[in-house]
Image 1 (cartoon, rainbow, N blue to C red):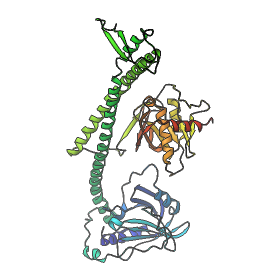
Image 2 (cartoon, rainbow, N blue to C red):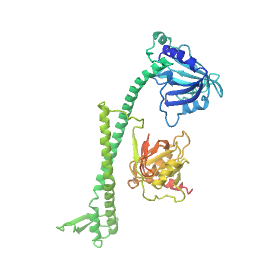
Image 3 (cartoon, helix red, strand yellow):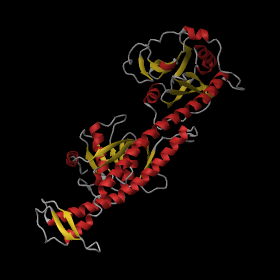
Image 4 (spheres, helix red, strand yellow):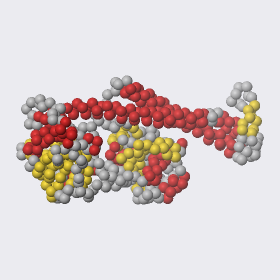
Length: 480
């Protein structure tokens, strides 16, 4: 909005809002604040947008969808400005700056909206005009005397006409109504384009990661397939245990699995006994069977997911993609739950959940069963706690206790991810991918077994089981 348009909006709404009080405050997006203002006989919503492309201030009639947890600035405004009386709304120096002069429970203060395009900002000032908080969250300005940005007279002179057509019938605020209608169309188009670009970027990243994962699964499967015939070698060694001794590098046997009964030379590890060689061949064959059982379904599922992602990316590139009706996160991962009772080496059976302490001294909880997972995630965990799970495989829920707004230390994150991998079906491979997010982004999967969840806004990390880290976690496990 130009300075002229802002002046006309102030002329329209200031007489009505002055004397009202702020009964509720919302922050639907990172750069938008909505004040719900109560005046005699009516409630109005004042929108303050500090988006670089759509900076503006006007009264709105439509309600915005708000995030489940109010952002930090919204919490600050609610704590200090909710309940404040609006004494005056005015434009500063005829520029694109608007201030709300308030009387709050702590005393006089001001809310200043700098609607200056790329530098747009919203600031809370105390009675002495010192900055207490701003929308950008910069700490270096807190406590400093507020100085308005340089005045740009040229823009106001150039814009003597408003571009908003005031043809909204029976509206007490026709200019605000026209602005709301204008930006509804503009922002809807921009939102769809932004969602399309965001989705395309996430799809490309997901496709790249998924292709690498499928390629790694194929490589692991190819390595394991070398052991396909090792059960046969084990059986033949078993039938000839008395023929050779430790120190032999090979043994010649009759292959009774072949109808022609040919001679077959089987390589041996000379450092192992005949029994040890036999056990080694059987163990490697079991590794092959495990890879066949686990990797082939995983590869099939991954390739189906890859086809779906590629198809969606094609619709975006062709311009036929549409955003979902309901706002939600771009990616969601359904986590299947383990129902078995497998024990890890440091499992504690005293009280609910396995309990550990991270290298940074933070509490880590690990569910044992599907029902414990459900109880841990939706009973014990708080919204800001860190939640982890091995990606795409049955396993335990892992929760790290965090203070409100605290970020997990790097070593704590690595400790928790190691436990998520250890207590999952990826333990056998010794490595895998672990997803993590805040507990508030984990929802129960509808009509699914206990412990089944839908995860949004997740990140992921690749983890390998390290003996040194596992030993340290075992030493710090508790029996609470």
